[in-house]
Length: 448
Image 1 (cartoon, rainbow, N blue to C red):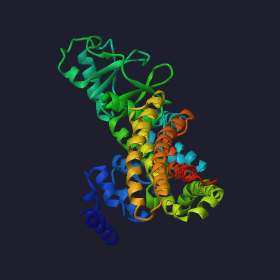
Image 2: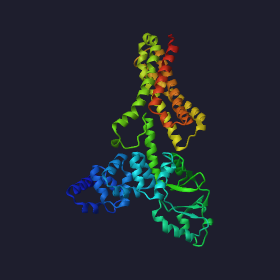
Image 3: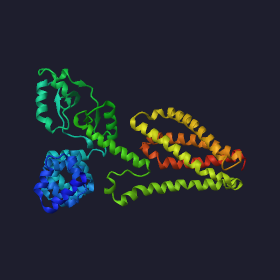
């Protein structure tokens, strides 16, 4: 259906049947319009944007990738750009301005009324990925001195433009945050009841500088559909709603996946990211891991005499490397995920250490027996097979503990724990595994 609509739009544009095209786009949801135009050429998208009413156009524009937005800005007239920019949410404006050259930023800001220009500049001054960048200034608030009837009148007046009316914020006259009030409490209360008697004090809130990932965690923890954003004086300056958080969870999960794969995070979709960006984000990691992995050559060189004396031990080397890497990756993934969900804190490191030690001992013991039995199929040297079995036990214990502890080290050093996973864990476990294996074989077989 989506492909058919895109084909139909292209045919309508080619025929110049803009009346039918406009009728097709009217009253559509922004997400539907975005999907309809997603595969169109930028020049074709520009035609579609000229036919959309200004609010819908601004909403669809904010969903485009940065490179598409920049191309459209080059194609549209100043009046069309002005209409789009004025109707965008302040947070979306800030995201767009981050991607543009300074002269274009100055030009776009000049299109805004003074109050909105100051508001947009204020959002730009907040740290990237903070609540200040994410928040919306469109919300309903009341004072505790109001009555229910007065509060409902304000909801009717300003609620249409607000991000949500289900959570209403209660403030002092200077907008210092006092509490929250649910719409249902207003509806079912007597009109003359003072707000002071029905609102919930001590609200959950975040500051403008709070990281967006922490905002998502707090909203999930308290099951909120909206959360207040305050400045350093606890004055209410904006709100973050649950639909914003869904996007943030997706963004943060994508970022963690990229880091765990051993590459820098990418903010744009695959086909909208230039090849050089992929190379720049991936190559430094691969070079670093290659150099780290090359340490294994020094380890093997150190134990050349052991390999020369019993060549069959080379058959178990890849097993040690793979098993250690797999166990370390499993352990680090579990701990990083638990840290993200808030189940594990920095202070829990020793509990995790003990648990992973026990888990590694049991899993390693089972794998050691399996490897010993399998070893009988390729070698009748019981000491070599025993060395392999004991080695795999030690390797699994080592990999499990290292995989669990490195995310704690990352958190302690204020590094994203996701960096301490994937290829990095695998490489360290590989090096540790091969060293443990040769040391164990040397000790048991008694070769110096």
